Image 1 (cartoon, rainbow, N blue to C red):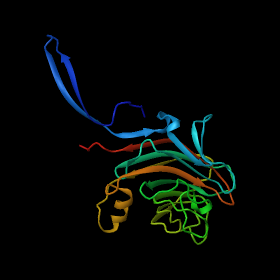
Image 2 (cartoon, rainbow, N blue to C red):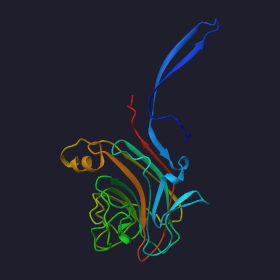
Image 3 (cartoon, rainbow, N blue to C red):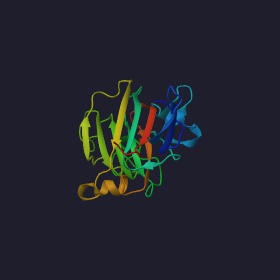
Image 4 (tube, helix red, strand yellow):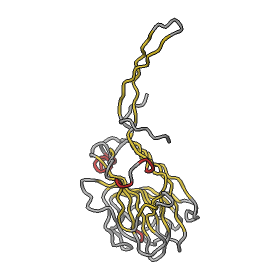
Length: 247
């Protein structure tokens, strides 16, 4: 993705042309640039790292946790909060080099209710609480976790899986799906597309705490280990807020 330094939104351009007889013509153009950023295009001083997380200057990626027990790490930028709806997030993640736990998540933090960027260790995977397998705290908002360790009584399956939760409720998956072996010391890609739902019925909670009925969100990549370990890395993060209307 090529970096563009212009401002987001609508831009009016004029193309001044001349034909072979030197007759001038001016063609007006209106273009729209989406709002967003790439990790590589940002000054790292605008990023914040809490817990075990840090920017690896040698490899130019984020390490959320090392392969050490009872770690939690979070990486986020407060410089560019985005709207809760019509957002696209892409990144690569790596899980491995340890004894097999716990996982990584993308968390959309509700700015109005948040008090910290760090959730619980172990099954909390850096975002969660409200369960006997982690002390929390649970982060307000929504989270998509990639869980590589089975916690009986909390996880919906013993397989590696992806799950969607509200308010850090690690044993209350709203949706989930099994994954192939994810701790294969290889890079995997995640793409999350958020669109505005109607603000009524079953979608009311999501609207209030994560979409157009709310203000802005801060997206955070978090990870955690417990009694078992893994190294959790993030690379090539891209966040795009769709502010341009589709044709």
